[in-house]
Length: 479
Image (tube, rainbow, N blue to C red; front, side, top):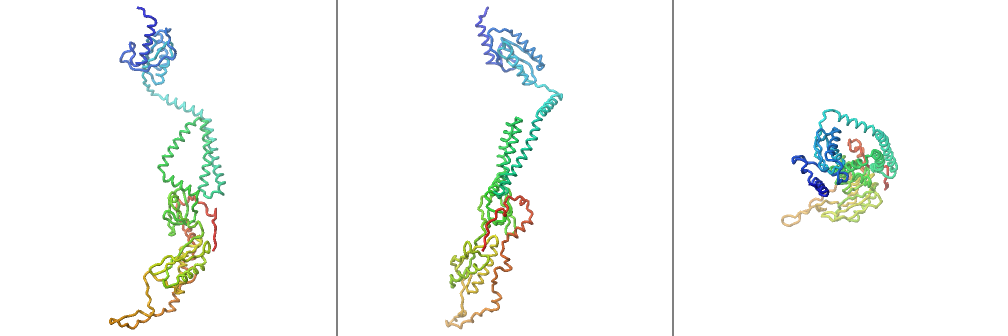
């Protein structure tokens, strides 16, 4: 029975479609229990009338595969231009190579690759030696790049150091904070080093690797930032404090419920010394977030005294006496305002006055001046017979205490109070000097605290980010 040509072509196409749609079970060519494989179409156009026979195609492909020595057990079968490959390969590359070879062979319509991969176990050192040899060759090939890196990177590093020192020198007259100068210099120097690093990576062809490393470093930086949030917060606070400079070394400040003289500031905390000589470390984030009271920012400071006088005393006379004591004292300033004595309140037994005065806070101690002025005010009021009763009401009987008998007749008055001994009064009189030995010289205790701080051993005080007070002297005032 002769099959027409069109029917043969249709049959061939049907077989091709069958293999494409069901690659795991080629009908009439392989046993049903054969392993499955991938199907690859031919690289060239399919001829209607094939030139090469199926046995020639199979023989040619099998001979080539045997010639390579990569396939110890290989079987090739061709049916109507469809090639079936069965056997074992040592690697995926060898399996793919066999498939590509078959697909490019003349008159091959499709390839069913059922070669399994079973890596060979090599008990020799040849693979290791081969890898070492390849590594050495790559190293020798990269030797010019290594030499270039050894030349460019040190040059970029020293150029960055030079730029940092130059920027810091240029900013010395404009920026008082050494920490701020150092940060600005480093920010300007880092791009110089990065340019050298970029040149080396660009020449070596590792730009993508560098970008990947920088991206990973950025992610790692975010993670570390969250883990050390407090440390980063204190560092940023120290940077902002260096920019704003709300205080300098030696200033007496109050912040976060603590008071003391500023000793130093590092990237983590600010060190204060209290009047008792205790060292107080306050985190810079706390210092930046809280209200800072700088008692040394302006030399002139205002203080007040509270004095209570009796209701039987002329308030105007007492005010003038107290005011005159303040005006006559050498530590009290006339500017920005002369002393004022004002009525503060009316108490149960006294009229409470409050005397305001200004003094140089850098030269004098507020506690010592208050002590000296209270002593002199008391002395002046007593000399002018100005009474200063306490909170309990005081009743004075100049003629003695009257006594009434049981029958209602007044008894003889008791004896009058004896006059005070003039010699005893003279001995108990207050001193009129501006400062007694107990009050010292009224000078500020900052110098003595500085001497005490110099003998203290505080490791964190070695790193000081505060500017030198002598770099920008403040205005001095005189009384």
